[in-house]
Image 1 (spheres, one colour):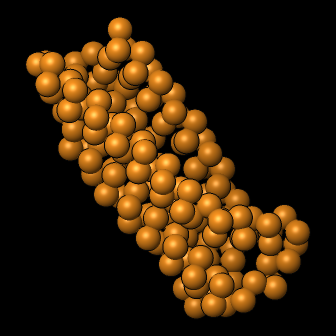
Image 2 (spheres, rainbow, N blue to C red; image 1 turned 90 degrees about the vertical axis):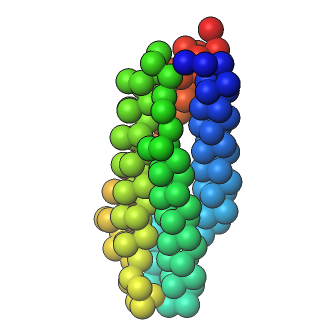
Amino acid sequence: MKKNNLTYYIQKINQVVEDTEKTGETMHPFFEIVRSAIDENNVDELQPEEIIDIRKSFEDGVAKYQELLEVIKSLKAPARVIGIHKKLERSYTLYVEGCQEMTDALSEDGTSVKIEDFNNAEEKQDEMTEKIAFCIQRMTSILLK
């Protein structure tokens, strides 16, 4: 692979990581509202408008993550990291699915939160975040040798 293509690949992966983090930071306060309500056993105190706003934030985040997944899928990985790139793509796909599942745990009309679905989605996201981080670390160590 030509040096400039390697540079392009590294820059795009880095941009995906940065944009993923920014998107997560934007949604985190909304996530915390639901997480706290679940932990404190007062989900029924969440107002419908609040749930609808949180769901909208999650939908926007999922759309952004979907765009970032398309970037990952479109990249031609250097030969040295093809396997780890495929693992990154799979992990990111499952991460986006987990985000969608969390969104789906909030009713569109704001009347309910499916607590078990929300918790399962959070667990899936956490697991995939770890796998994504592993992939990025592994790629970095291989490509920057």
